[in-house]
Length: 228
Image (cartoon, rainbow, N blue to C red; front, side, top):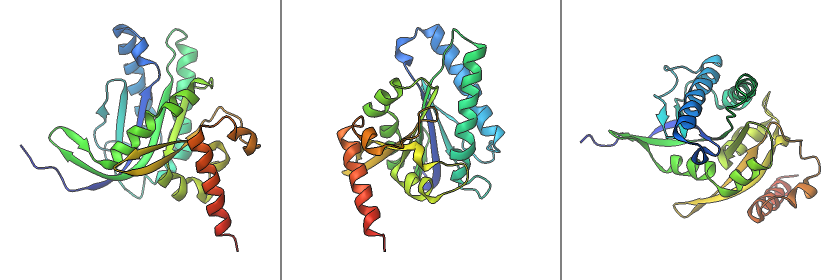
């Protein structure tokens, strides 16, 4: 058996079908086919092909895309272009296939990933999938009508979302959950393109989980510390 590879940095983008376990096998097959087709379209439409991305990893009711750190594919492309494209494709899919509604949860993170003969692994992937499968994320998605919810890690939120880059609206990101991996707490922020902008943050906080409210309070405290 080959030894695991050294760690390689990857942008981690994964999607998961909502409610897959409630469908029979025929419906699962149809949804899986549509999921692959739409995700591959969204990636290719924004310049992400096999030269930029490791082979897609099948997860049964989801897909993992590991994108190599090339200058042509900064993380802003995922947030400002791939995610909106994927949402539009999902909307069109529902219009054209009224009996086959496909809703996807997605996660965006980045970190070091190992590979062995069985596939990729590592702590960064553990964090991403914990965020993707967090109960608060699933519950929040059930509260909206749109076809897509994205949760981003704290690292993505701090280094990309908050920096004012074109096409990324920080006001549409809400603290939603915290997960623990290897004794460390990892907050997650939800982006719901079909939800209203949270103009009244105190009112929104009443509907967030207790952990999300603590995250928001800590964030405001940190922000005040840096104001001169």
